[in-house]
Image (cartoon, rainbow, N blue to C red; front, side, top):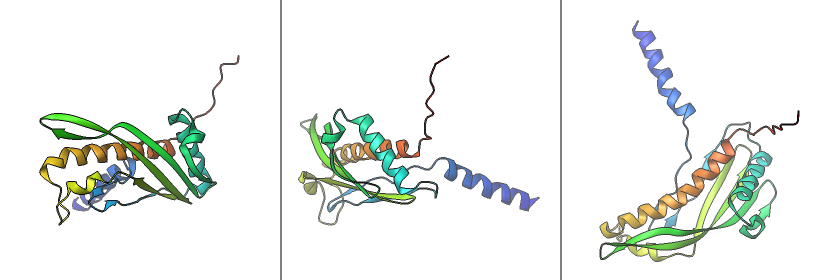
Length: 172
């Protein structure tokens, strides 16, 4: 009986992992943002990942051609992003929102892709102590900065992982 419970416990432990995978998250540090590598299952070829990224850009930008900076088929896509309320700072108990301009580089290989976040914004470097810990007054700034970065990352991941929609027409 103990063996059955043990096997059941192991099976249920993996169940949540297998069905609810989420991408890794960008984390802001005093040195910037490290790239995130997302591993997919073997059915995702480089060309499929590339086409899903291009679809996502087309769906999320008014002028996709203007957003794309580099487009190397099946290997690299670099595009620009803008958030009007990218991160906030609390000054005199008032939230002051700052815009955020950044680029996303997506390096593509079969069954995986690497996402690199880059920005000219350097004000976040003063948010940290020399040992790398966040100053208390900038904790909300760091959180809002990371949330906006990860919103883009999660949206892109969800689109890549979503099943291909069948074209259904109502021609009868």
